[in-house]
Image (cartoon, rainbow, N blue to C red; front, side):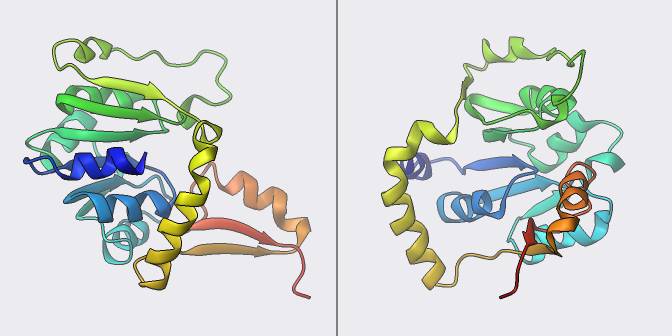
Length: 202
């Protein structure tokens, strides 16, 4: 996977990458491998998190999708030349908008579609036809597919952690009794950063 990312970095054109609602780890890899990134913020404290994405995590741009009347237009504004790589774990209307904004021969890595979780009638995707004329590659994966690369990943991340290139934020809830509320808060954007629960301070 890392070799593929390095190959993408060597492309002559600038590499634009659009990420949604994912851990700061993805941003680190983006920052090390590409020249431009933007992220959509699914948050209650919209301005705070949008600024956090730009100021602490190093995104070139960020926006709150709830304030955008047209996601397709919003993505076109941030990516006038189109999107090369899209890391998907949201689905629904956002994926539809992304498909319309993908570049020729763009790539989509799918690790989930959280907007469709728990829905009895999941929303369909209407713009899959874009895969054909734009020659887009779209592939699903799960972590265990690459478990053999974990030692290489640890070495890679350890180096950049020691170099101070990893920025992260934790949102800590104290006490096991607060775990249910912390979990439910994930689905409404109450957490700022990685949600963790401290069960003991001993």
